[in-house]
Structure formats: C-alpha cells, structure tokens
Length: 64
Image 1: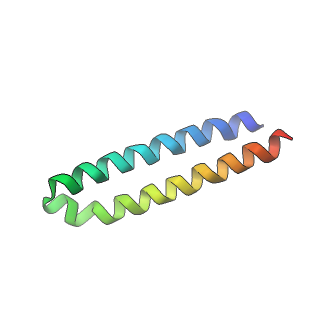
Image 2 (image 1 turned 90 degrees about the horizontal axis):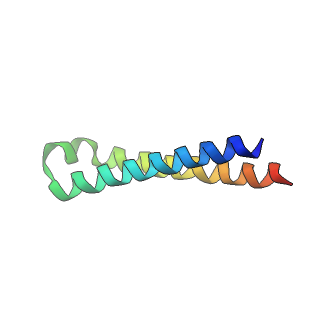
C-alpha cells in the first residue's frame, strides 16, 4: 500500500516543481500573464506541496 502513496507523492512533487517553474518564469517575465495567474500558480504550488507531504506521511504510516 505504501508504494501507491510513494507514487502519488512523486507525482505531487513533480506537479509542485512544474507550478514553481512556471510561476517563477512568469514572475521574471512579468506582463499580463503574471498579473492574471502569478498568485494562483504559487497557491497551486503550496497545494501540491501539502499533498506531497500528506502522501509522505501516509507512506510512512502504512509502512509500519
């Protein structure tokens, strides 16, 4: 069961990395896209981080 949580954790971590990179690039470039979506992308990153941490905790709990 912990293997499923490990896979979901990896997916959430990659999604977090993707949201972070897109958010940083839009912030560096500026413009209309950043004004419209910059804050949303950073909130999405935090959501994915939370999901990854929850999956990590569940993987640890189910491992025992």
